Length: 295
Ligand SMILES: Nc1ncnc2c1ncn2[C@@H]1O[C@H](COP(=O)(O)OP(=O)(O)O)[C@@H](O)[C@H]1O
Ligand SMILES: N[C@@H](CCOP(=O)(O)O)C(=O)O
Image (tube, rainbow, N blue to C red; front, side, top):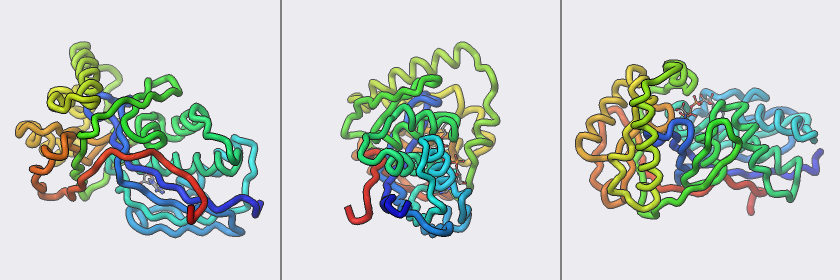
């Protein structure tokens, strides 16, 4: 068991949905959590940065629980305990994919211990991620980086072309909102006209992100989730409206309450701060990586 090597992982923040691509489109950012795991005699968890005071310190820590469950699924080896050190940069419960990043970290660590030297089986990883998360639009870009598309119901992911001029600006509010709560307010059915608008906008968004950033404002309209969630995040909803009225392609990141603006770096240079939000400038980034410390 002690032959299992210590591992170091980096996993990015992600914005899922991007407006009309509910549960299907997602983008990885250059904002990463760093995690180290090693076999230990007793559980030990050291966390700095985001969520440091809130996350569990034992086997119920999301990364450790995911790692142990996945090792069992892969037929072991399951260590007696795990020591984990995390430097968290991704805010928790703000719509930037912190839980998907943690799940991808746990799954990649499990695969590396159980199948050393073998490239990760994407279908296995996505199936496991969906079992924990319930949707894959964060886990896919967290794993692969860049812009990704998943088709709900299929454990398959496509990496889509992304114009290198595209960047982002995230407005992160102080208040948290659990994704589970934000999914809970969505209605079981939506009007046909709204579904049709979203289908068209999602297609236009793929085109805009591939090389037509001037279309981003029209391409980021959403009727499927943001209107229903607005009462849970009134300040974010008001900010989206204000930014869009001023011509910026603002959307709710994931299930919110972070607001993200998509545009070229030149367009985003003019973005002003908003009261009650921390602003973080973002660039699209690579997917998760795993190695041994010091690699
Ligand atoms: N790095 C992490 N380590 C441990 N737990 C985490 C980590 N990231 C997220 N979590 C758990 O997931 C919760 C947030 O997940 P969720 O509501 O899906 O929001 P989001 O993924 O948008 O940040 C946190 O409150 C915490 O319980
Ligand atoms: N499609 C999901 C995305 C949730 O993303 P998160 O970063 O808020 O966890 C949804 O909209 O519920």
